[in-house]
Length: 617
Image (cartoon, rainbow, N blue to C red):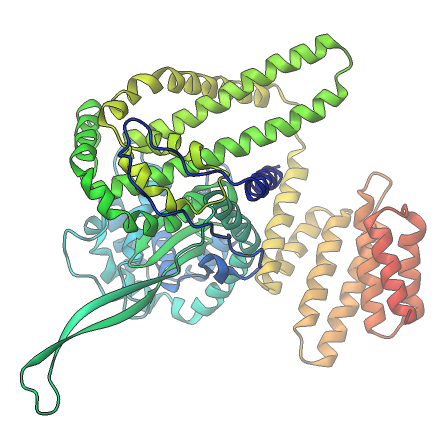
């Protein structure tokens, strides 16, 4: 469903952009509160091409060895984000198995440090506990040295509190044997990163289509240097030296992160989004982080205009601090950047939800049989639309209270230029020029009612979900446990850990003797491991084992079994037999699928395609 939502928004934005190209809108006329200045004609800019190359979007997806070691050390120190009653992730279980022989004295010292420096209070989540250590990792050099930063007030918040963990980290690296396993861990994280590629590209396309801009991937600096004059001339001369630095948005997969918790760290020109494997970049803080990556240079280019509004923005920050008591940064440029990011993210989220509501409404209207049903649907849609708008206001209000005091202002400005077909950077100077302290100070009173409604609606929804869970029919716990275990095996296969996958499946076979899914997974494991065997004899042995497991999956299938299990087993067997040059047997496997499935079924079509390959057509 989440994927569908994002695709709906992408389609909506593309439609807006196409309409804008046919009938471009002029820039907004200055209001009474705006200075009437002559501006150069805005330049239209085409978003990046629909290319699968991450570099087009300034994105890199790669694991970070120092983060992997830090999170492994944190796990050894006793940090555990696994929800109560659930089993740790496959990677965490493997890690703990690898670290079972860690020196107990060192482990105790690490646990003592973690407990002594843990955040106090029930409100501190596992993600909160880990955040300072993630920040610390990004201030260090790469293993094995982990060079420490200089102690200063410029270090990220909370790093000084845990800086003395670094000597323990170095000892852990030397004594745990992780240096020998680190390459395997990096490969596992890289495999997780591969699954983030497509959604990351889709997320970037949507953001850039909305802002109608390209990401700035280089920073050009011009500095004046002095050098001695050459030849007969005496003295010195001034030269301008140009340097370029790359900017990158780095998506860093983290197999040990707290579930659902995205960490965002800006280090120099690198914007690092540390993403757990259970998070979709299209519908999470990753999108907001990417918006910041795109917006920050645009705001920097408008720093002159922002400087003219310094006193007004500071006044807003001081008033908000007095109202809420929140500790807000006095940096007016940071406030402007955060506000524009918050506004763009809120507008995208609202457009996403409204476009899905529009689609659902259209589908339901087709099925509405009479005027009464249509009237009821219209009423419901209006209520849902109002709830979406309240949720957007709540999102902006939360940003406002955290220092993005221009978030509502930029939201109003964005509404006026959406779909214009012009690069957002053309409008930022006028957006800044139109800031009014008097107007922005009224925002808290205006958003209070909408925020209260949004929070009440969320509370009701949570109560309804809890009631639904209480009243739901009890699930087959044994079946659920099987599916969870098979999901863990899938994770192991993705990182090519065939030995551990087979060990777990053999244990599952003892518990589920008649379960075709277990035998299919055993066949899949044997088949995949055969692909990486260089010895022909070993490869043939594994392929024959796979055939035997697939045969058992077929034999244990019953009329109640999902028919796709047997179809997939026949197809896998046919491919192996074709590879072994046993063509007649392979054809029988494909025929079994063709005869038992409908022509429109995907398995039927795959079997036909495989049989054509077999016959050389």
